[in-house]
Length: 187
Image (cartoon, rainbow, N blue to C red; front, side, top):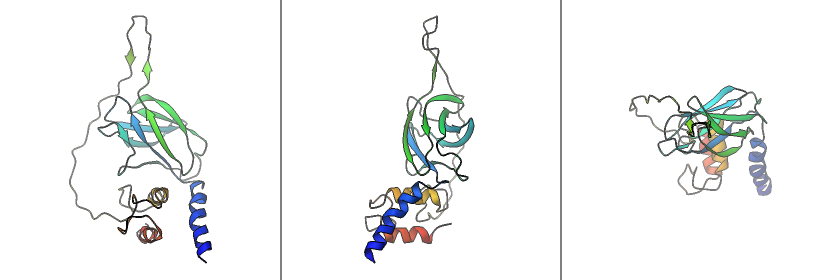
């Protein structure tokens, strides 16, 4: 019985990560840029955006960044990036359930212009909304901070199985007891 349960616990996450419709998680650093928005495109359609933090990072805990694929149509497609409205370097192939670290920066145009100058695509300034203070009770298992426990939180939870990162009951390890808490809060 134990062997069957252990086998199910080890095989189920592997099967789920390859399932169509699972999001692709992105995180990383934008060089020489410390505010604004990183936009992700597939076939010239904006499929997701993440705020660039003051240290140039995006998609780091607690502000995880997932590109959703509800219809299972993005597998194998190329994701490209823009910082605000300006083209950025790099591309990543979409894989359902994958977690990818991305290092990107603005695309430099006309590196060797006749006048010897370098032009850089500069994005328009971003207006930052005034933060409001609200008091909400955090939901155990809502690792993305969006107010619901869903497949994005499940993916993050499974990726951190065995570590203290997603420990929900305070025993120092992510295990089946924490899984039960996650499922009890599922929306």
